Image (tube, rainbow, N blue to C red; front, side, top):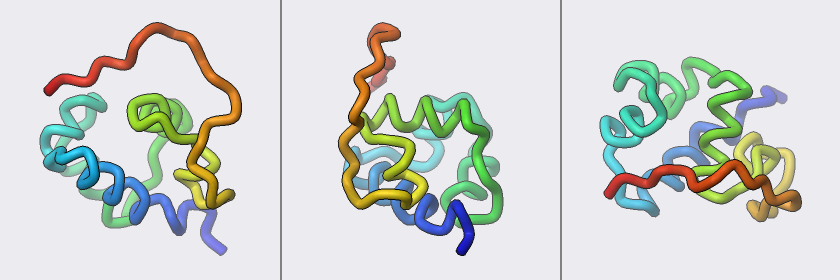
Length: 87
């Protein structure tokens, strides 16, 4: 099984739930629109660093993003300061 099989679906689900366009979320994550679309369409895999940032932004675990668990709650809280949520 592809280790990133559930990631595109979960990424899109989180983006839509938070009422973000692909372009806006790409900007927030510091990637191009095209690169972001490739993540959401399952054509490219994000770096571990970007996975971590996405998890922090949406307050979900990387394990959940990758489909390793069905529990989205982060078990270990990380305190790096607030993740900027531009509205």
